[in-house]
Image (cartoon, rainbow, N blue to C red; front, side, top):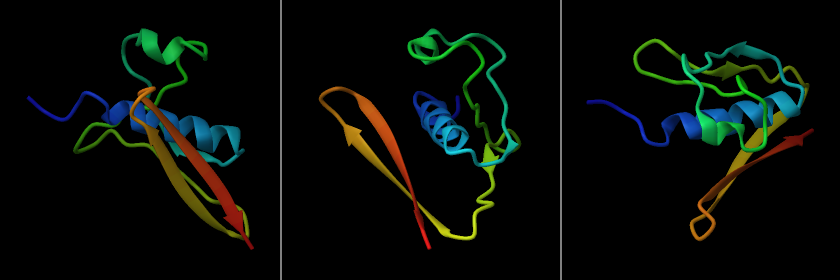
Length: 88
């Protein structure tokens, strides 16, 4: 028994947002097995597993500006979207 059922979906979504923004990925671990629903729009391996107490996902804001991360949950479509905004 432990955390699961959506925790890695959130870290995967944040990983893809950081990667697409060009931010350096400091630590990321892919699942040890293929997760099909992560492959609906991406090739295999573009996921980010998190698991306490060791496996983590970390990225670095290497820009000179602050980074605001917001997310939107569409319960009807069962979709989570992250928005990353830079503020000078």
